Length: 210
Ligand code: SAH
Ligand code: DHB
Ligand code: MG
Image (cartoon, rainbow, N blue to C red):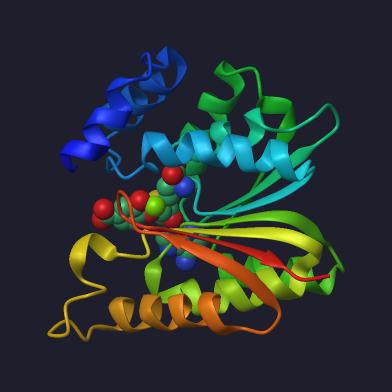
């Protein structure tokens, strides 16, 4: 983390609920790749500012971002979270329940592409998306998000810098290429207005026009 990122993080008191979630993730042998604390706070703010009430998360891990998202919901709002691994969804659900948010979330287990196809088939619509699963899938996830979006929906994508790989010309692997293409689409797709924050590991924020 940069000294500037450390500085702004140091201004905030530790969030004991989210700290417990990170400990639970580590003690279950899961990777420590939850969204950055500063972007978690931003997710809560964005959901609240957008008055979003139908959230879709792609990539649950241990529920850290799920808690941040659901914290911004008004009464009656809900979160659908797509997760490949049943064991991870179990841990995420447990953490959501402990945070008092268990009744707000539904996990769809399996490859997100299949879950997204199903949601589209069912005619489901969402007003907030958080894309944070396998990086190779990002372009497909973005296209699905736009198709499942209500007018004015917010689409957020995590890790768009891939810890330096996105901007390293020598890196030409499938995940890097996919994230570059995702970023270009975020910036240029006529259906979106957007900005991209380069702090931490980079965060893309778009609004579906209309
Ligand atoms: N959003 C979480 C972090 C997600 S890490 C947070 O910030 O708290 C990425 C997650 O995506 C992992 O849990 C991984 O199992 C999941 N994942 C990877 N490939 C996937 C796929 N094809 N479909 C659904 N989930 C996937
Ligand atoms: C990494 C971080 C993430 O937030 C993520 O979703 C996937 C991978 C990482 O640092 O490797
Ligand atoms: Mg991430």
